[in-house]
Amino acid sequence: MITPKASSVLVVHQASVTRFGLTTLLKSKRGFKVVGETSSTPVARRLFSEIQPDVVILGLTLQHGDGISLLRDFRKMNPAARTLVLTAREDPLSVQRAFRAGACGYVVTQDETSEVLRALDRIVAGELYVSATVARRFLQMLAGGLVETPGDPCAHLSDRELQVFRLIGSGLGTSRVAKELHLSVKTIETHRQRIKHKLGLIRGMELTRQAADWMRSAARSSMKYSNLLPLTTLMSLASSGDDQLGDFVLAFLERL
Image (cartoon, rainbow, N blue to C red; front, top):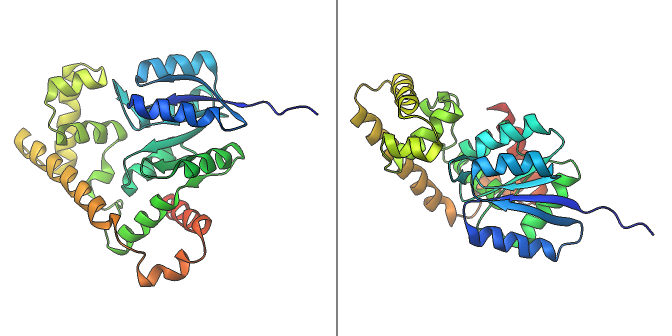
């Protein structure tokens, strides 16, 4: 009997403990073999090109770059590779942009290890996947009117602009943002100007304040809905099972 070839896995995540945990987890999972790991965006591009992994487990917050740009690069370099996002971000905008950039699955750090393994099996089988945690949080925020839509100003920012906006909201100045993204200060200043124009802002202080408010709002929304049970109006959908929840969320994201 011929043993099926194990799928090669590249782990790209900022947290070393997460990379270690995933590597250890997959050693006990038949059908997968970790062939590389890194926390750096440039190194991830190099490893992906050299190793040509079947699967990538990817965080969205990385050193010297971000996961969304890597998703696009990976899709261009090898469209057949399957990428599973593993992140702490649960907001619908991050989920939507990740799938648009090329993600095949999306799980969050609070998910059980069994959910990560299930997601890997599903995306290797050619399916799209979101964890039950992401699906339920999305539905709760949708019912509360907190899902990002094209009418939201931030929805008009490009992925790079949104990345810069997040870093500004985290308290980083222009030089720090440039260093974090491996870009010139002039390029970041250009992004800042474009963001201010799109958001109808004039002064840099207004941009800093709005970015910080946006980050705080996202954090509060995540905490507010983290302990809620599915709303009554969603009970029939929730009772149909996690797969149906995931399918609903994926279909809704495609329409945004």
